Length: 355
Image: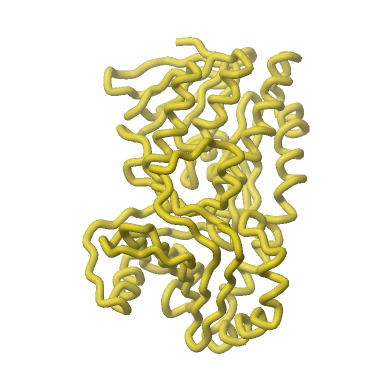
């Protein structure tokens, strides 16, 4: 099969980019190893900025959020804005919605399929994909890795990066919770290397946690749940990576979690993915116009541009994340007590998408 572009990964980053590329008249194939998109998706807490990119239907919104309450061992720090800051979105519905937009635009899909091998020729990319019907060879001018934190294409391309990994895990408890605040817990005893959270989702409550890879996230999560006398049995695990990643090669680029377009402070990245999808679509359109798919061209028109826009924010988040990871419980108490002195400033100018 021949396409202009093949995208490995049909999550929001890959699907949204597919829609943009179809609007430019390019033929696109989306490939994903999952049988059902969104079946075990990560947490769906998005800033209200998501409505600039998608018409979010009311049935996807489980709750509206105005702020957060930060917990350390001995202190609580609360930030609350006057207007809605974030939306608790039904993540499986959202992922399926974004994929449908891509398929409605004319993008083709191969689900329950995975990349087996990759060959770079002078004029094209050839991949062998294992599908439920057997192996298929795909030829394209460009390949895009949108296959998450554990990106197969990133490994195949051997792109360099300085990445940090954490393992996230979450579960849901069927208890009504319409609070306007998410609860965030910081302690090396609770979630070493990251944090734990509670997200009010209207008719249910989400409990989640992430730890660095040196620790057993499942054991810490079970321990966290005991604080609330909960014994949940259905868990959803999801790796997260953040840092600085090379994102282009000849006839290839990465986007979304695969490109570490992720906020180090929170692990979220949906808005970063949408910003980068806009930049990628323009770069890819130029590449086809000029028939130039070299690493240098893609770096200039894609990687340099997205990093110029987002890396200062990512580096700020890295600094904060590294600081928090280095603090013990007493020092975390002091850190958040200090933030209380700047509560008004944070509430008036803080932006959850750029931290």
